[in-house]
Amino acid sequence: MLARTQNPAVHDLRDQMQSLGPDLPFPPRREDLQNLVVQLDRAGGSRNWRTYAQYEDGPVVPGPWGAGADSSAGGTGGAAKGGAAVTDGLRKAVREQHAPIFQRVDRDGQPWLAIGMPVDFTDADGRGDGAGRTGSKATPSAAPQQGKPSGLIVYAEFPLTDEKADISALVTSAQAGALPALALAVVPALFAARRVLRPVRRLREAAERITSGELDTRLPVTGRDELADLTVTFNEMARALEKDDAELRRMEANARRFAADVSHELRTPLAAMSAVTEVLDEDAARLDPDTADAVRLISDETTKLARMVEDLIEVSRFDAGAADLHLDEIDVAMALRKTLQLRGWQDQVETDLPEGLRARFDPRRIDVVVANLVGNALRHGGTPVRLTAYATSGRLRIDVADQGPGIDPQALPHVFDRFYKADAARARSGGSGLGLAIAMENVRLHGGTLRAANAPGGGAVFTVEVPVDPRGGVGVETNGSGADGSGAGGVASVPGAGGAGARDAEAEGVEAKGAETEGVEAKGAETEGAETKGAEIEDGRP
Image 1: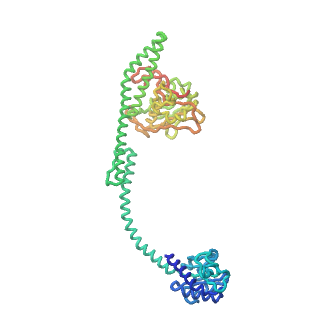
Image 2: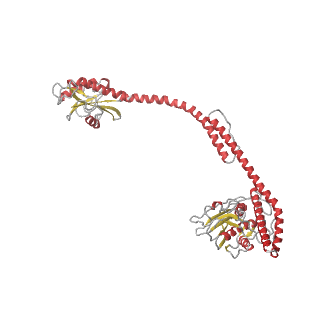
């Protein structure tokens, strides 16, 4: 709209100068310039513009910028109050570029258009004639350098009040029409967006349910668009996941059942074999050396096999959730010293055990845990091995530390895995690889944690934390009634520590000498497990 106003104004001013310029004498006097301005003002017509003329560096006609706004004929529009709309920047640009230039300015809150147009000398054949001699014609230049500058510049200014009113009316009309149209368009847009987003929202919620384990989640399929195809694909994915999960669970259950069944079936013949090998061991000294070595080999392998069967049976109890806690309130220091004495380790282990500290836990299971950790340290760590116990914040903490090379950092996350071996090249070991895994399960059953780490000063540290009274955090069974417990376990490494050696998770359930085992006859105290003479732990270090 502004372009439709300013372009015709520049064109009209050029036409007027083409008409009046040839009759203007050069160099023009003030009276000549005044006469030119009056004629231009009268020719402005409806534009109601105010014109000015300036020859070279002479005075501006009529008078200073903005003066005499209402004095001349046809100048009722006048200049802007307080000064002309023709700015110093416009005058400078016209002189430097020597071309018609317009500028929109604001004066007292009203828009104005200012135009500056230089006038050139041209002769009949369009060539500059020199110094403006008599007979030369003065015409306005359409672009810079099209003629010889005459030094005369004509300016025009007029208000854009009507255009501003038209634009305001147009904006008001647009707002009046656009807002209702926008309101009418928003309603169906919201319905359409809701129709599109609702299936997406259902897909998200269904994905969250599947993530939480609800693999039977399905979505209704509506329509035939891309979202319907996506829903069909989602249902197929959920169906495949559910099928695979069911198959994996079935295979896992079969594997556990197989291990448990085989272990129970082997238990009776192994008990008989153990009894026979004990008799043969007693007579081995009277046999010839080769026969004695064979008898001892059979006895050792039978003992290892019996121990592995007992470990598998224990693991199957944990997997089936049938492991029970038989809690008793006992003296912690006395129980830990008894664990060392029954295995003959009291002279090999330094202890720091608080006197008078009592806690409720299953003595047999804690005995297995501590015996595995201490036996592990004695077999693979450096002496002295240190056993420490203390209570903090309602929890019992037991630390077993050695002075060995520590645990390989790559093996740390796996030391409690079943059958894990740090040395993959070792095809067979003396242990079942279940000892530390069973120790972890026993600690979890008490609602505690078992961690392995490397000490900053060297050596490995195994830390057991259990509640002083497990009844506060897990379901327990006392007086022979069954309950299952839960807990959290993990592996941690101490910053700045590293292990040069490699120790794996093959630690055996440790029993006291002369224990009467379940299904295997031995000497003395009663435990559930095969008879051993210390903690059998395999080592992966050189």
